[in-house]
Image (cartoon, rainbow over all chains, first blue to last red; front, side, top):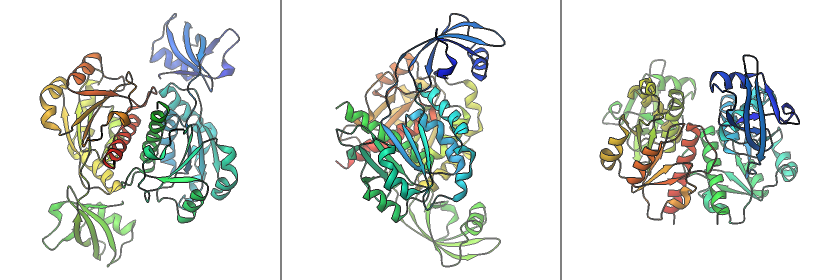
Length: 246
Length: 246
């Protein structure tokens, strides 16, 4: 891990944390920590800083933490048609690692009913996968995840309160526009809609267009949904980063 | 599959192909093809076109093919430090799907010796994974793969003949520059160097710099190597696509 994540409830008033779980085993057996050693640590949904090892034995690792710096705020939210469970499992850590702010999972015509039954939609299961991604990317901000079984209600009624994005884009191979040209200089936060393997249907595309989503694509290649998600999110973040730098 | 890939040696002079392998089973059992049905097909490393089903029974599927259109030429080559076997396995189809032209796998200080022993470096194994990615992305061009155990010799002696790229970039978190600004308007083909999990060492970075590689990054987040590869390749392709469009 590139960052040791600690839950706020685990830290006492003096900044001391006693770990006895998997993290303690990892610190002992993989990193072979010794007293005095300093590690990069972060408070879940809070600031990052350092943890100094105070003691380490077979039962526990005791750390003294100082959290000083807030990680940057997210700039990209994702509206994603629920993918196959296997793809969803692979995506969770990558979405967190890439820094997505909100993940709005939705139904769509080409989403199979049983995709909603997977345990990878259970908060206790996906939270662990999201934390893995945050530890990898040295971030602490857990993406906010919501599941919306009614696509139309989500787009018509819920989207305005669910995200503060000032730019809405939908990935659709029928469009040739690149995200790099679609992101205007003033854009601060982007909501990106990514459809199911078979794409959004006509009704869904029209509804998104009517609610301010402009069409973009990565060209004509058909990508597997997890590859497409990572590719689109990377380009979105880069487009915003370049715009922000002027 | 979005494209049925056929090897040149499988097609007779009249364009007829008789499939009896896994592809035949897929056409019968998954796509339930019937005589007269038209499919998208492509000739490995050749043009794409259509295949019309002429006959289908328990033993074989007979197709009549017409290949008419060449897929676009690759614009991005990848110089990649050999990743962990598990990551390499995941990467193969994605590299092909993203349209990478050449994959130059190399040693580096932080590449573990035993990574070279994996069967995912055997051409018969990775070729099947590359074809999977091409079928997904509707491409026929199999990336050319070479393995270079000596990084220095590769960079100093072999690179000029191995790739025709007119722009060389190295992903390195120490640099803040984005690929979007690093790709000049005239760029036609890009060679992107991506290091091992722990990054390139000082010697490797200096050698790359001395041979024309400019440093870029996707910002400060530390990504898993497969996520980083997909993200970097997506941004590279988009940067070139936008430049080409003016």
